[in-house]
Image 1 (cartoon, rainbow over the protein chains, first blue to last red):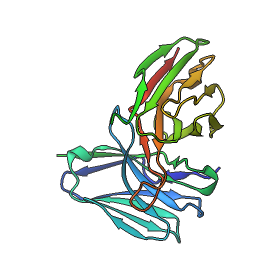
Image 2 (image 1 turned 90 degrees about the vertical axis):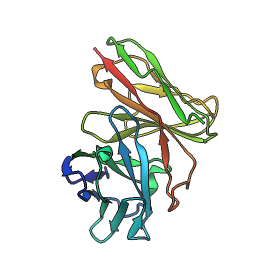
Image 3 (image 1 turned 180 degrees about the vertical axis):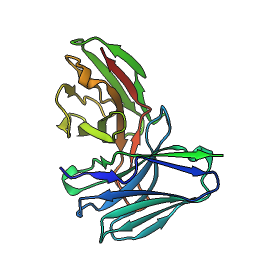
Length: 113
Length: 117
């Protein structure tokens, strides 16, 4: 079946660096893409979303980039902090899923100070 | 608002036992979901509901049952627990189009960790 995947299972950065987490998706009909952050022992928390008719959206310290040509999504975190350490998931909302989201496997971000 | 509340947080079952994972939300959301998360994997959809009295299967429904008698509650039942059902279970609810760009942003509970031995 179609699914959303992430390129790297782990990413280690130094505090203050910029982090880039990548995601490849396979369903070109998905209209929305969402990034979630999951801290240890907690449920996923919404970070930012982007619609398929956009190529960039910025939030507080985060930027999501969407490249529909190569079906690629990325989350950029500026000035990464130890509190950013978590597992990051991208998710998509293809038409056949109705209102449900399909999640990728996740990237574990570790920030050392 | 408490958001999405799941109980229990942890449970150990023996093979063949049955149990119900409880999920309740106080946001008056019509849409609710159950996902499971296995180690190193993303979330897989088990069942979902678009409103009271309506449920439907997701990607991995085998071995589970759900009911939706009220808007607030969406319990997940395991009838004959198997080791393959060892996982972390997440309940979520949705008000469509609440993302900044209009995306369907699910609100998740804290999870229920289930071990079947």
